[in-house]
Image 1 (cartoon, rainbow, N blue to C red):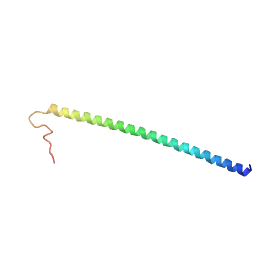
Image 2 (cartoon, rainbow, N blue to C red):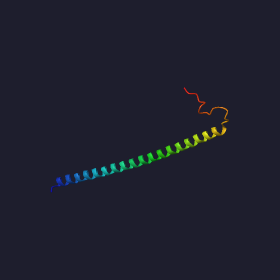
Image 3 (cartoon, one colour):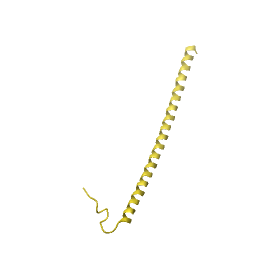
Image 4 (cartoon, one colour):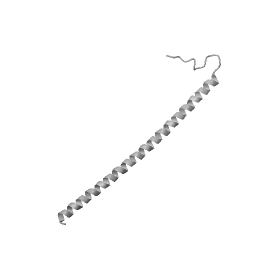
Length: 84
């Protein structure tokens, strides 16, 4: 093996090694991105559920207040709304 062949072989080996390292880095980046996307989606779902539960509690509290303060003399608020 001549020195030129040895240099070419070592250069080729280095290129292959760098290519493999780059593929590994890209795969790690992809896995990291998927992980954080999944974490973000789970958190968004959690926040949405919390907001839905809070809205439901508020709606129920308002409904209970209206029923408690309804005097029976006027139609309930459901029939007293203006429809456009």
